[in-house]
Amino acid sequence: MPTNAYYGTGVYGDSYYGEAFWPALLGAISALSSVSGGLSNPQITGGISALSVISGSLYIPEVAISSALQQDADLDFIESSPPGLLPDNDDSYFGTVIRKAWIDRIAELIGQLDTIYDERFVSTSTKFLDEWEIQQGVPVAPSGATITQRRTVVLSRVRKGPLTRTRRKDVVESFILAAGETTAFGKYSITEGISTFTYTVEILNTVSVDTVALERELTRITPAHLSFSVILVASLSDSVYGYGDYGSGNYGTA
Image (cartoon, rainbow, N blue to C red; front, side, top):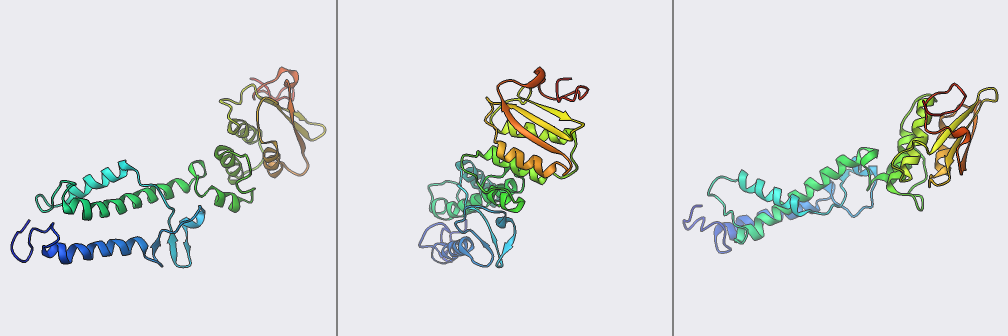
């Protein structure tokens, strides 16, 4: 670091950098953090709106700054700086006032980018899950529903295609797994009434499945000429479990 009268030491308050350059840099960092009309950081509760431009601004969610992100940003700053130009120790004026302000903002931006990436996908969405529910036309944050159950409902709505036995099986099993079961095998059966154009979904009453949401999704994918019912039972009909052969009209084991 140059130490002539113009530059001073470059890290203390009575130097040129301390009196002119660093305050200007800190002012720019502060402005970046609070700018309106560009990348802003308002207090919001969530929404896919964070991924789109609204009123000329790109809204980013509030995120917690982890110590790991701060440490990574700090080390990256040090490694990217010209050797010997700036002090590396954190207890220096530069380390505690300048570099910390910078790395805190960088760490926050990294956290925001990670959050936005996760929120783009239903399977990892949390903060913006309510907006996924709004867009897909399903109940928003229903009382008592877990994050996993809410994701399952949205995923069932996002997936498109005709009714097939495989798709119906996947929908039923996804709701059973969302209820906290480690496996859907042995927890349900599906019996088809070929001549009556019906099918019945039996689920063990020990499974805390959201039957209202399940019926809603089955209604959406079931053609109008078919009817169905979802019932909770103490034991499954014909001792048929899981999924497999349709030879007897049951959704049973292979």
